[in-house]
Length: 231
Length: 300
Image (cartoon, rainbow over all chains, first blue to last red):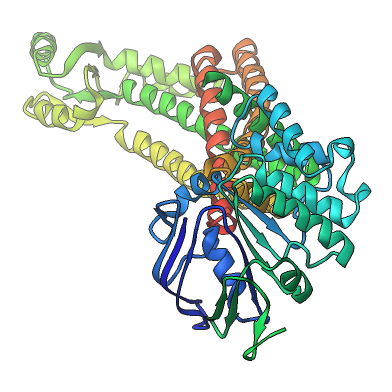
């Protein structure tokens, strides 16, 4: 469970990105985070994978207060979650298989475990047949699915996706969404920041709308909310 | 667990070698600079070791010379020798008559010494006593003790000469230490730059490592090893030069009979120690250079 309580975030340049927000997300939920650029959604996402630390308030994920864990222990928390980005963040000189395996290698897993887990993960995103290809030999959607495979290879309880479809066309976006929904169906909580109005309105999942650093709407049944109207 | 650490270690070393290869020109300049710094260090350490050797010998050689009053009788000289032997710190007393002193003088001038033969009939020189000391540092005190004997005329020892030589060697050492420190700083900066380039080149990879939960140690190890390798490679060259150069110099000075004033320490007694020392300093400089860059560019 994620419990964000009275959180504010003020950056070093005195910019206030979040202003006293409180949000609770249950295990197994799929939640969209939407809002204009600068609304605070990226900061909210960064707090969840502890790239940033809240200035005030508490961010509790799976009973762990992220505002209290010291920098040198963040890696232990990160091993329990998965993160996906708009720009995929794949290593160009590694194959799809090696990119996914990388997440396990840094933990010192043995070769057999790595082989088994990577194949499971690539199978889930439908890319087992392309595991020997390098990122530049894959389409944008496929690259994003490799990134998702890497994010879930450790079987995280929480998957955080920051604009995962931002660089993709609508059809490809749909295929990525299907993968994320499948992962969610298997029990992983998914929190996804997006700008894509159509995506949000089509799939009708809980949607948090940010504006000027506050949550202006928490739509349990989904829908992109802005200026007092659901688009 | 052991297997896990072994896997990790293998990976870190592989990454470290890859990093050096990727920035080989920069790494090469860092290795060269470490080599220059360490060669100077090695040279300086050898000078220090041998200076200590020479000054030890000089101090050991410090003797007190005293002339005996002209009118002292033979019995009084015998008594004087006996009595001075009992003075603390004196272990040996050597007596030379005035004639023996003249012989020495004539000999020391070689062919030209014959000119002094005319003094045989009326020798202006005095008989002397030479005192060998147990502890050279107590020479001044012994001189004071000897002044109690009225038969002794002038009492002197080579303190000033020894002290002057030691002072010159001290200055050489201090100047050398400053030069070595300066070159060492340049070496650390160069290694630090090499590591910085390695960090920059792997920025995306480091970001991904962080995201997938790699520990700080895991991220840092390859860079520490890279610095260590550069330091060690930089140490091998000066070690080789020192071993070969010093052995050659020692055998030249010994075989050619050149070894009169300066007695070099034996290679077997100094070379292993100095090689390990240089290797250690190389490793330390390498690791320092890495840490320097990491604290600046790998903060979080």
